[in-house]
Image 1 (cartoon, helix red, strand yellow):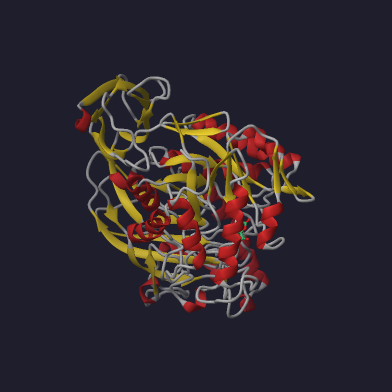
Image 2 (cartoon, helix red, strand yellow):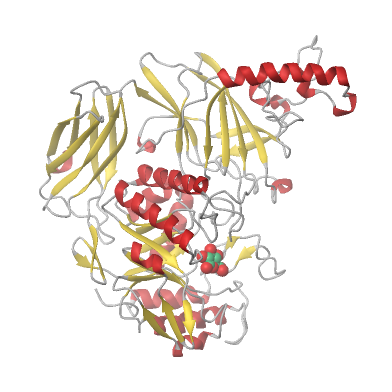
Length: 619
Ligand code: GCB
């Protein structure tokens, strides 16, 4: 729409009339244009052959989203997604050019790649050329590991999808947009915070924007396996159960599962809902546990489609106030982890990032990690499976949302679905966390109860949790938020010794818990600047932080139903709420390790307690 590129100062009545006319045509055209289908979830996407689109992408910073919206804020039909090249005889200017634009690396947040983008919140355009030879009878998906927060994608100028939510993977069908040979893809990613987003306006972590996780093309046959769930039965010994869903499966299509190492094999027919129910015995399977993180190569086949996943088999359940892994009580010795990249800061995405972070958790003596406050990258979950770390996976329902807004609920549900559907085959994940530290109101409770019911329906094999806020009467801390009724495991966060009282206040604190359920202290801790030393009462010193841990461990041992802990936090992480110069410098300093990998004294206090099993009930 040419008129949308008018300079506002040349505006006249005649042009206004022209503009109205063009707008009417444009509205009619867009109303009839097919909206692209919603992105889908592919389970085990990283186990499929793919064409990587990682690398350098051209980028244009567009704070007013001028590439998508006209000056009257209508969607442009000639937006920057056309990747137009100016022609010598053009009668209008083309005011963008991806071929001369600076580059950004994908995967990667933009904030840590360019100084001027450090605080940037808004839209940025990405463009990349690539060649591709589509094969007959295939569907091709653009796989996006994560784009924070709202993203739009076009292939050769055709819109292929739009997605909301910064921390879940999605796949857009690009089959009809791709050409044989030269192609281009344009993405717009907008990390503006809005009060009706999930998460909303307030978070205590950096709002890293961009294509933060890997991007690739995945080709599948016309009939393909999009999702599957294979896990050990809780009720029958050595029996693997679950389902496989096949898109476009013809009537009577068959699914085969094999675990060659255990000589187990089965086949099943898909039903009317394109789903084959799986139930077969696999005697002699070695159970997955932190001590023996055994993963089996599992083949899943249907017609022309095949995936080989790496799956561990274990059960998780509760009995009274116990958590049972493979039928045996376990105490979760853990730590909370943000997806902050070690040494370089920014959003973590690589195998190496995951191995460093989880390697530190292992060194600490952990058998469990709380991956806060949003679903982490697949690389993190694969590493946890391999390294034997049980995982608490978290939905980004953080602090206060518009709990009475049905649109916000729909957004939270969509992100929860994507989280569970993508990662349901990771043996490491035992807990789905619905929300962190939400205000105790009826609207909140109903909102999270709805999410919990949905999570149970999607995955009845895992435990539902959420960190609750705690209230106090004198020296007694009380956990009685009614949301606890909807949970299998009660999480709670407390900062005795940091936000309230002194470290030794923990010694006189009593606990009253209104639920006969297992309890995990999902956060406690305090800040310290690595290398800052002083007496025990010098806030920000390593000594002060270590002292919090000593007193906390003593106190936590007095809570009979405590079944796990994940203090806050493994490593210092970027937060815009932490401006204290010389100490915080925009990092939350509650890490046991600094962002540059220096271990603080508290790391060793906790390591000793974990290694000597001096905290928690002996297993
Ligand atoms: C909390 C939040 C966490 C914050 C932490 C803190 O309770 O759950 O996201 O970063 O406290 O450091 O204050």
